[in-house]
Image 1 (cartoon, rainbow, N blue to C red):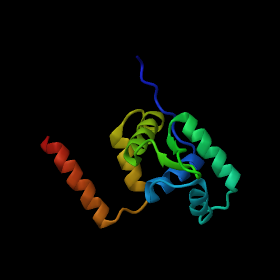
Image 2: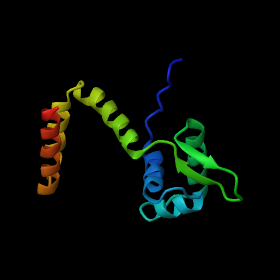
Image 3: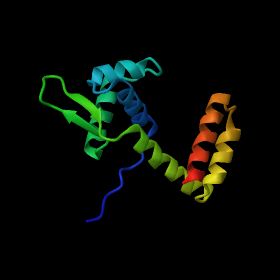
Length: 127
C-alpha cells in the first residue's frame, strides 16, 4: 500500500490551521472570528474551506453535537516539516545549508533565536 502524501495547505487553509493549532478544536464561527481579526472573510467562505479541508484529510470534524467542531488532523510541526521539505527541494535544490543561510539573511535574527539555532546545531554534531 502506497501512503498518499497530504497536499500542502494553501495560504487560506494555513490560516485556518494556525487558528486551530492556537485555540484547539473550534466551530466554524469561532475560526472565522479569529481570521476576521486579521483579514475580513465571510462565514460561508470559511465554512466551505473547512469542509474541503475535511475532505482532504487536513481537518477532522466532530458531527456528534448540533454545532460541528473541527480540529486539525495534522500537527503544526508535521505541516511545517512538509512545507519546508517542499521549499527545500523546489527552491534550494535540496541544500539545507542554502536554505538556512537564506533564512538567516532574510531578516534580522534575535540573539535568543541565534542561541537556539547554535544549540540545535551543537546537539546534531554530537550525534
